[in-house]
Length: 249
Image 1 (cartoon, rainbow, N blue to C red):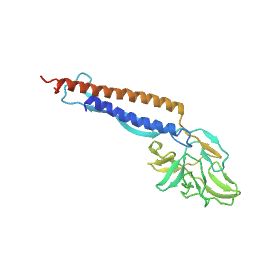
Image 2: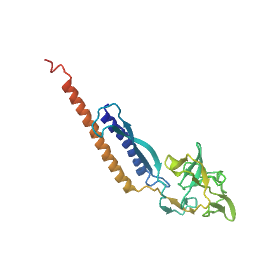
Image 3: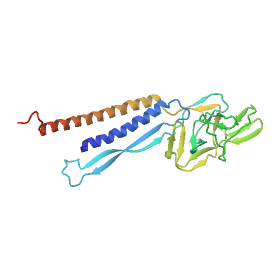
């Protein structure tokens, strides 16, 4: 592959990843607590030494996929009336216990397991401020959740929902639709603001994402056409330079 096609191919790989990320955002536009993903590209410069190049052509610029990060802006709150639907107004994340270890989430759609454990839709227990699964009585008594996360049944205090904040929010990694992996330590949030009977929606803006998808797709098509044109040019050059049985003297 020649240099021009190599540079174009690096752009195609990056644009393919961008299309996948935007498609994932669009697919999760209605997922509670979903955080939109963003991609970060950069130029990887390759200086050319001992080469006879035209002015301005001594450095080759390849497209490099540097990172994928999460948009931390909050989503809209929607009141449901379900006592185990919880939303965080402001900063912070819930912590749930999965088979792979603790995971953070803004998806507050919780329910009860048969033993009274408060868990998400996948059955991952919600953790309290001490990092332990929260269990409530299965007697059918009304459950109330205060703004600081304190869970009570009548006058009996049961537990306090843990709300944490990662030291570096930009190093959160998505795992599935709503779970997040923190690559840095987390610390408890001093003054959490939890809203009972509400859910936080996705922070994806569907119209914006559709516009972004169209723009990326057009760029991808343009570069793909360039690569195809380069391939045709090479094939025509080879046909003219190399003899074939049909045009031998």
